[in-house]
Image 1: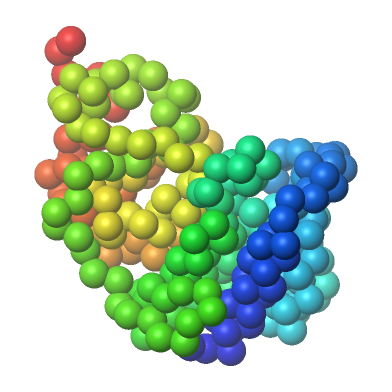
Image 2: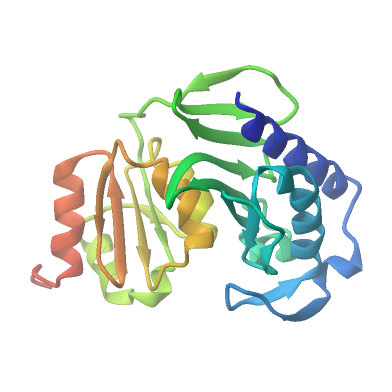
Length: 242
């Protein structure tokens, strides 16, 4: 691991330890609209504070909650809690997205599942999967036996959701897009409908460079195979007969 990845892991472990202490009412307190356009909750602020403490030495931090914090030549793009609504609702599918950007390009990235401890990171050495609290990590490999895809924000494109159902293309919509993209090598596909913010995508989409990626203004398709990606794009363009 690089120093940046190690620091991000220490921060995530600290956040996970705080969450294991139990739910606090202040985690649900709202403090206004964050830099990313969504309401900031207390759980977002708790995680952001810890990440800033551990990562500020690597450059200025551009957080979905507070915007730009600190100074530096490099930029840390941070979504402290990806899937905040899940976290607030007690659904175990939420995490963090962290990217280190140098000269306009992402060079290191971390996505962590705070609910189960999965820890993904990518550096020049490749894409790795480890666990919070454990030292070992293994290279991410495609799972050819996957049985479902992920359709984030499926409610934003119900016609495409119905088209997938007609084709018997099973999917889930868990509600944490950076985390879902981190699992893209394992599932059949990941689709996201709607405008994209860099806080959610900077780290995880860079992790998907080895996959088939098709992006338009309102739709993102990531798949392990070109055939699947092309089929999803065709369905999105409404070329399939009912």
